[in-house]
Image 1 (cartoon, rainbow, N blue to C red):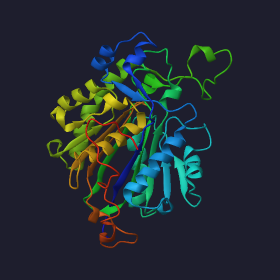
Image 2 (image 1 turned 135 degrees about the vertical axis):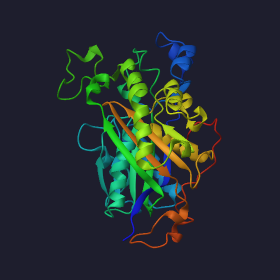
Image 3 (image 1 turned 180 degrees about the vertical axis):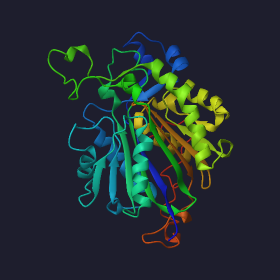
Length: 367
């Protein structure tokens, strides 16, 4: 039996329409537009409505992904949610996504990998179900309402984060195409570098500690910066060696949109030009686990990625955790129908390049 890989048929997206600019943040906390842009690279971010939950954003991204893939949602066998801002501690957000999407005959579960690296961790879990032959169509949904765990009086974090969602649709593809290699890893000594202190069993939220603000996300920016500069470059170089795909062969690097300076520095540290990295942090901020697929989606829409492109996807963040996937972007004919075959029948339906409307590089990623 020939080996199969998992390929991304399409990526759907959704970002809330409400935009919060740096100028507005200047009226809320002690910061400036100039400082935010020079230090972080963000100009604006999108904020979910008060009544919107991660599952709401997820359903919209999933629906967009199905439209782009040319499939009916009923064709999905498995939904994996990678949200780090779940609707409830229990049960899994995936079940609420199934409920809201009307997917009564589908399996769903969550993969929580601390947020930012979840874009690769959840993707890898979905890919395993494809390559094992267990499921034919897997939706991996990354939806975050970071604004609801943000302390809007903390200028070190509120200037960074934004809300958004994206959804990968995975199907089997020919060996040598699709996801050709993935590496996951952790540096657990950095557990407290980026976390939400209160709200779990270790420290429940109580009336006496509520006003301490520790139910919101906190971050040791220096620890994350050091991790990205000291550890991540070696990880990316090792992935290149292990995958057999040299860094010079990469057409584009899609990194977690944590900080524009980190992205540019990473490119220099691995010996690659800055313009090989796709950056959209200026318009979306740090959307945690949604960051990488939102950037992928936008890069496809503006023509940065096309069939045959070699793509390195790099997620990193809380945990501390990292994940790197190397992909040869699929052509429509690379995808395989159930139980093998040529895949020719998917050529007009499942092209990842099939979009609702072309985007310009300066446009915000909207449904």
